[in-house]
Image 1 (cartoon, rainbow, N blue to C red):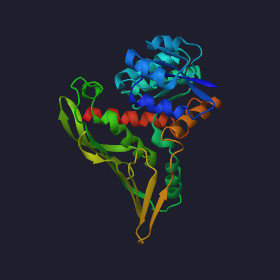
Image 2 (image 1 turned 120 degrees about the vertical axis):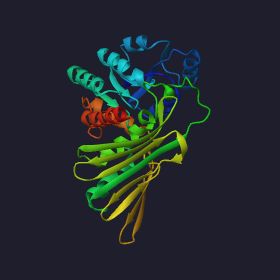
Image 3 (image 1 turned 180 degrees about the vertical axis):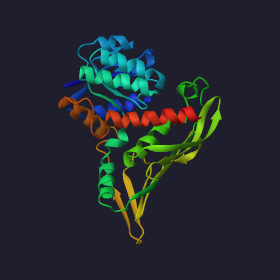
Image 4 (image 1 turned 90 degrees about the vertical axis):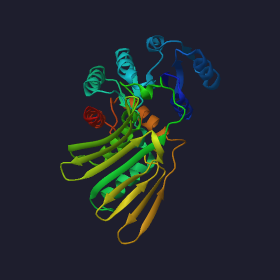
Length: 316
C-alpha cells in the first residue's frame, strides 16, 4: 500500500483525493494546509490518517511515500525540492516549475535519489489519446500540417490578490497555456524555430495570449489561452488527408475525424472513473517498477514544455 500525502488542500486537491479513493493499492494517508477550515473539511470528507497544519511535518512523516503538491505555482519548486530531499516520490500540479534551471535541479535530484518525479499533465494519460495517436500513426489524417488549440474562459469576481494576478506566477500562460503547449508537443516533436505572441495584459499579467509556433520542418501551431473571453476549449489537428477535433482537448472523451474524402468518424472513450484516474494509475505503475519517470510524459518531454513557456514569457 502506497501512502499519499497532499500538500495544499484547495479545489484541485478535492478532485485528486476523490480519484485516489478508487485505488486499492494506494490511499490518502496525510494532508497538510496552513488553513484550519481546509484541514477540517478534508478531515471530515476524506478521513485521512492525519492532517498537518504545516508542510514540513508531512514531509517528516516516514509513513508518507508519495507527495501530491498543489500549491500556487511559485511554490512548486521549493516544495518539490523539499519532498525529494525527504525521499518522497512527487507528483506536482502543472506547471511543475516556472524556470528550466529549476526543473533541471529537480530532475537531477530525482535521478540521484532514484525517486519518481512528474508534473501532473493528465491529458497525456487519458484513454482517448491512445486511440488518437494510434490513428495518426496509421496515417488516417496523413501528415500533420498544423495544430490549433484554445483554452479560454472568463474569470469573474476575481480578487486582486489572487495568485493568477501575481506578476511572478500569474497570467494565463502559466495557468492554462501549459496545457496547450504540452498537447502540441505531444504531436509535433520537431524544434521550434520561431515564436510569436500577441498578448493582452491586465494588472501587469497576461490575460489573453495568442501564440504562434513555427517548427523546423514547417509545421505550425496556434495556441490561445485567455481568462478574459468566452469559453473555447477546442483543438484541431489538421493533416494532409483530414483533421481531428477534440473538445475540450485537455480532458477529452470524444474525437471527431473529418477526412477529405467526405467520411466522418466519431470515437468516444470515457474516463476510467474520472480524468485523474489514468494519471494516478501511471504514477503507481511507475513507482511499482522503480521508475523515476513515465514514458507518456518523460522528464525531457516536460522540460521541452517548460523551456517553451520560458521563451514565450521572455517575449512578452
